[in-house]
Length: 180
Image (cartoon, rainbow, N blue to C red; front, side):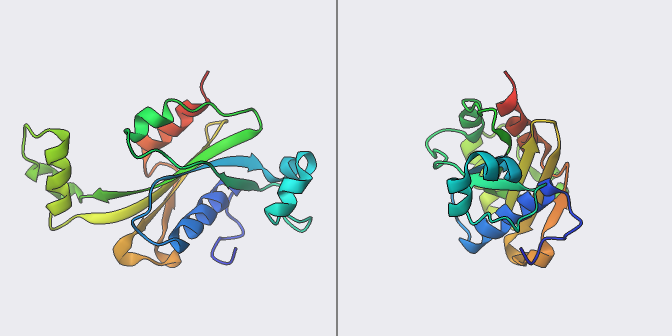
């Protein structure tokens, strides 16, 4: 992957790989869920799947391979859907790419009080300072986290912001999919 820093951790590389993949699909996409599996284990235990995914012997052994899951349902809230997920032991982490509208902190004081969720969503969608953002958040069973944020108005691989605590609420929801 040409845009991923070689010194980055396997989790950061996986998040950037997913961001690049989803970016190639364009904007206005549904949420996409990925299982993260240990690349070396996948090659050993599932060689035919590894071959289909293009994971030849030249791939590094310390990496993570994202595997896209079935479509995320759009007829229910994302947090409710995530609460229904239980991963098999072979899955060492998971990631979610989702688009949202965000407002700058300065807009917080402007939010009208007493609006229901539908009216608040409409208010944000019509706000002149809104930003469309794609968030890719990943967590590992061991608690490691990573995120990538891409603004629609700055849609370039060189403009992707990464960090472990950029979207803490979504990271918590994903981490909960590994709890018993």
